[in-house]
Image 1 (cartoon, rainbow, N blue to C red):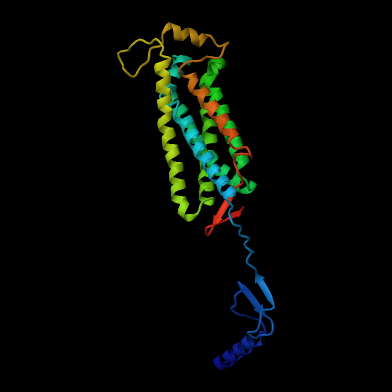
Image 2: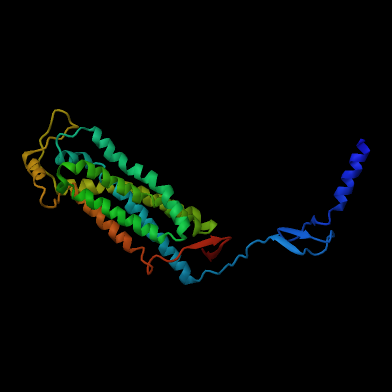
Length: 293
């Protein structure tokens, strides 16, 4: 078959098609008659966007929900930083024979928990279509983890394992930071977004600062008798503290357990803020117009 015959056959096949794609205001259309008249069928239809105006009441509810999330960011960061300066002497009080290697595991448990929980919480929030349940559960875990930290003395020889577990649980709860940032981005206009995200970061930073300050204030208010060692980084546990280690029948209240109780109460109060009467339904801001999602 010659080249001219091949070209001629290709032209015949090309002209035999009676369906062509034509440009129109529709995403993709088909004209069955081979002309450029009105399309008969739409292959892909763009979903209709239903925008609603934001009433003053809805705007107020959205702003309140932002304040709730700023408070949550603050409390979560306080829960992480409040134990940093007291965790080592607390460990020594529970078990004077512990090495400093264990301190690293206790501190690392929180960020490890957050690293694991963050993507899982993001997936869950998208699947559920609402972030309220995720916030309630994470704040309940936050309170549980800090409660365990406050009552470590009742676990006896298992206190170290329970402490690591408690910090891991608090780390899981800290994963809600990703949901907070996602909500802030979705529920603000382009003009509001920079300020809202900045306030979220500021709340976290203040939480990191306030946590150690609370521990310092508790140390001054509830100072215990300790003797100085030749190594300034070593804390010598006194006989009075050793007696407290033996007494595992009652819940302790001291400069170390108080941080756990304070964080536990903050978590419970924060959980109440996510009740429907306070934390309103999420709004997504599209092109400056509020629309329910």
